Length: 170
Image 1 (cartoon, rainbow, N blue to C red):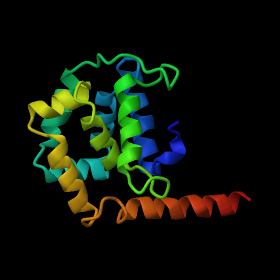
Image 2: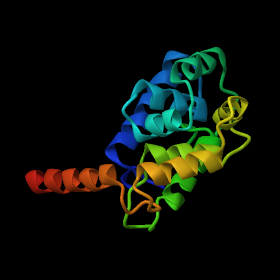
Image 3: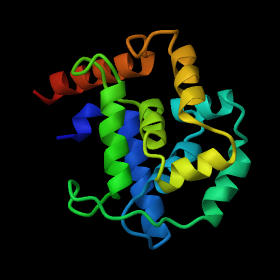
Image 4: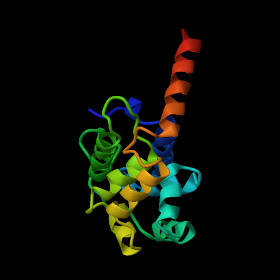
């Protein structure tokens, strides 16, 4: 079972922002397009950096997302909050953020997770502009310093921040 504790703080913020964007568009469930849009709202996220790194024009991408509508089916695991494709993307993100159990999934892993769902609205839209999983995975490795995920400074800082919060709450 995937939980919020599997993700970095920034990834959780992106998921919350995606829910806000879906609500503002009166669309339900929260889908992969909403999450992709949330990555672009936070232009400093690793997902946005990776998209820029593979040559995606984020302004054009935002317009494409704005013009698209979400059509993904509701997923069972989230009680209908998230689409099936988003649930699967979240599960995939946790899987690719290796080693499991010692690393939190960040926005860059969620982006890979989206692309692992080729039938998802966001993966199809990204495909139309030439963004594919292979190029994103390679760019993630480059951005994170060549390792699969162990070099993710954002995740390390997030873990430290959680530990500090836990200490102050006790």
